[in-house]
Amino acid sequence: MTMVLLTALGVGGATVVGALIGFIFRKLSHKFSDIVLSFAAGVMMAAAMLGLILPSLEYGGNWGLLITCAGIFVGALCLNLVDKLVPHLHNLMGGDSEHHQNSQLSKVILFVAAIAIHNLPEGIAAGVSFGTDDTTKALLIAGGIALQNIPEGMVVIGPMLAAGVSPRKTFIIGMLTGLVEVVGTLIGYFAVSVASVILPFALAFAGGTMLYVISDEMIPETHAHGNERGATYALLVGFCLMLVMDVLLG
Image (cartoon, rainbow, N blue to C red):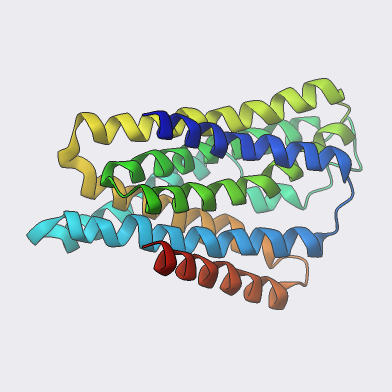
C-alpha cells in the first residue's frame, strides 16, 4: 500500500513539476513540446501494451481474448463519452487563449477541466496495474503516465496567465489537475483489490483508455504544427525505451 501511495503522489506530482517548468519557460516552442509529448505517447503506448493489455490476456484464462477486447473498447467508449462533454485537448492547446485575455477566459477554464477529467482514467490505469502484483511493470506504467503529465502541466500555465488568472491561483489549479490523478490511482488500486475477479477486464479497460488518449489527443496535438516527422520518431524512441526497460527489468 505504501508503494501505491508513493506512486499516486509521484504520478500527480509530475503535473506539478510540469507546472513549475511552465512558470519558468512560459514561451516554449511548439516543436519542443511536440517532441516531448510524442516521446511520452510512445512510453504510454508501450506501457499500455506490456503492463495492461498483455497481462489482461494472461489473467483472463480461457475467456482472456474476449475479455481483453471488450475491456479495451469499453475503456475507449467511456473516454469517447467524456469527449462529448468536454472539449478535445488538441482543439484547446493550440487556441488563441494567449492573445485574447478576457474573451478567452471561459475557453481556458474548459481547457483545464478537460485535462483534469482526462487525468482520472490515467490515474486509474496506474492504480489497476498494481493488481497484477508485478511491481516492476506497475512502476513502468506509472512512470510513463507521469512522464506524459509533465508537458500537460507545462501547457496549463501559459493560457491561464495570459487570460488574467493570478500566478498563485494558476499554480493551485495546476496542482488540482494533478490531484485528480492521485485520486484515480487510489480508485483503480482499491477497485481491483476488493474485487480481483474484475482484474482482467479492469486491466484492459485501463489499457483502452490510454490508447484512446494517445490516438485521440496526443498524436493529433503533436502533428498539428508541422513537426510530425520529429514527433513520430520521438514516439518510436519512447516506445523502444520502454521495451528495453521491460526486458532489462523483467
